[in-house]
Image 1: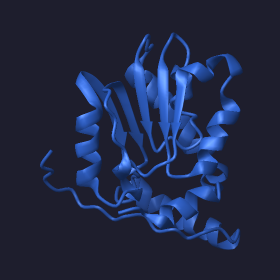
Image 2 (image 1 turned 30 degrees about the vertical axis):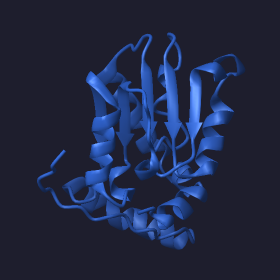
Image 3 (image 1 turned 90 degrees about the vertical axis):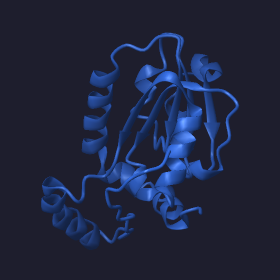
Length: 179
C-alpha cells in the first residue's frame, strides 16, 4: 500500500524548490478558511515542510505533523521555535499505517490525495481521526482541471530541462466513496 515512488520523490525535496508559489497560495487559502484557531489539536496529513499548518502553532494549538518523507519532517523541525516543541508531534509513516486513539479538531490534507495508494483508506482514516463537528480541509492536485492542463506542459518541460524527477501522480476519477 505504501507509494514508494512518492517517498522517493518527496525525499529529494525538489517539490519545495519548485512549488513555493503554490504552497504560499495554499497557506493563505487555509488561513482564510479556518481563521484564528485556539486551543485545538490539529493533524496535518502529508505536511511537507509544515508551511501551511505552522501558521496555527500559536494560541495553544498542538499540531501532529505526518509525512512519509523523513526529510520533509526535518524541514518542519527546522522551522519550529524551541519553546514550541512541546506543542508538536512528528510521525514518519504512510497515512495508511496511522492509528490514533485520540481525535483531532482540525485535519489538513492538502495535495496528498494524488500521492496516496488508496483514497478510500485515506477517507476512512480521516473519518476515524476527526472529532464530531471537527473541521477538514482537503485539496487535491488540480491537473485534470483547465488550469492544471494549461500549466502541466510548463512544469513538465521545466523539470525535464532542469533534470528533475518526472514522478507521476495517481490519476483519480470522481466516484462514490463509502465512508
